[in-house]
Amino acid sequence: MIDPLVHCALFALAALAIVFAGSTFSELDDTALVRTLAKKVGWFCLWCAALAVVIVALEHTLASTS
Amino acid sequence: MNWPSAQRNEPRGDSTVAAVLTWILPGAGHFYLGMPVFGLCAFLLVQGLYFLGLHLSDGMLFEYLEPDLQSTFAGVLTPEVGNLGALVYHMKVYGYGIGHMRPWPDAMWIGCWLTACSGILNACLMVQAHSDARAPKNAPDPGFGRIARPVLAAWAVPGLGHWLQGRKLRAIGFFALLFGMLLVGSWLAAGSNLSRERHFYYWAGQFLAGLPGLGLEALFGHAPVTQDRAYADAGLDLACLAGLLNVLALMDVYAFGEKRALEPAPATPSPLAEPVASGP
Image 1 (cartoon, rainbow over the protein chains, first blue to last red):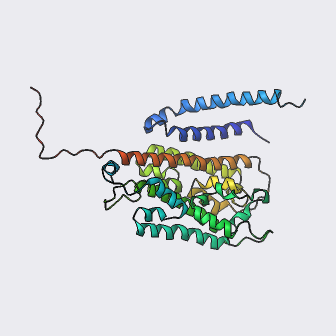
Image 2: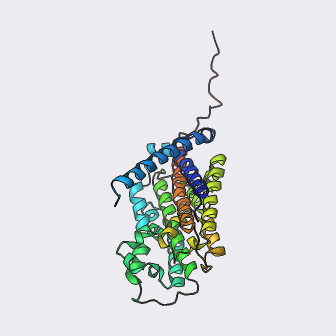
Image 3: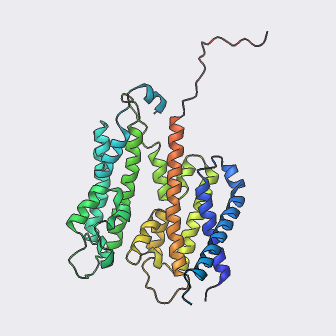
């Protein structure tokens, strides 16, 4: 049984780690890094959602076998 | 070591040549830079680790791979590639074994750890050679380990390199996130992600998160898988991602160390200097 909540929690953990590790290059100051983290994670999730919508749409149109 | 002064004086050598020589043969870069004692010690340590690992594993590391993955460049995505000379020797002499399955030696997994650690250690030695090459030729102390040591520490424990550089908030963030991902991933996969035999290339990614992954492997990595785990693949991905993200941490530690070394030393006012007149 696959639980959507578990999926979301695992995605949130991975997203947080990816954004944190990626931000170390753009934010040299530790305090600024932490302060802007929530906003960056939000943008990351938004773009991932947009990409997921595009993939699902393509799957149901171009890749459909029906 | 003060690199701005190295720009005024003659540096020890070409940093790219020193790094590439070290990649091919550990210590060779330091011989090129005129530091034979350090080069010899580094050679003995790095190659000693690799050949002890080869001895313990009977050179059977690449027999972990399925036959369809046994290609000429199969070793490129392993940590052993950090020690290129030893990896080429390993592939030439032992290759993919004798063509049929045989029992693994008792200390197989320790042997595999040692060869992988040798690759990571040599990558840090390349960092060392790259920075030493830019130190002034006549300086008695080129600053051993000022940059490479935090990089090695950042591999060993995620966040430790940042901690040593005084960036404690970042260090805690890296440790909590990456170690947390390793723990969650290993729990979801019931430790099956920690076995190099089961997941050869995922293990290579995970190994980049350093000693915490090895500790988990020693504790939970060799248990038999007795039931289906719904999130085993997600756990495998999470643990591998933790190691790959630690590469960004390593690069950050290296870049910060290099930037700090390139900054000019703060000028100390001479006690004999004339006091500056204040106001009219």
